Length: 131
Image (cartoon, rainbow, N blue to C red):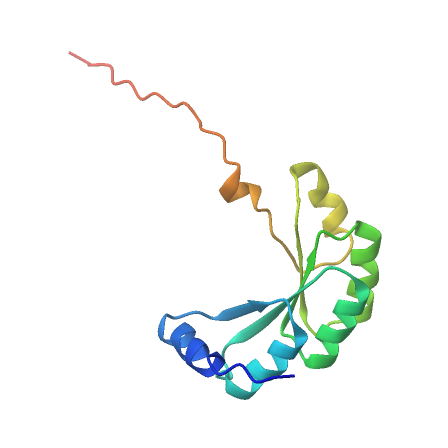
């Protein structure tokens, strides 16, 4: 695993900006980040399958994001993680999926549609004079 020379400077920049988490998709980067990151910085690993979940747990991820996984796979991941990290479900979440995903035991559900697919609400405010 080659060292990323910019990683310490990047982590310092995140800390100066007030960031409290770093999201990565590579467990090797997690191991390097652990060497340089301040102890207050949480490191989240994005996982798409159980092999990635196992690697993230072994590397000591603080938060494990289950990205685009089916509910059965999420349940398996939650059972495997067994409280060793915060578990986040993400990817193509829709209102109809929330209950089923919540029942898998994840700690957090991220719904991107709240920011990228918001529908406008037409609101009118009219004042009626009492005079």
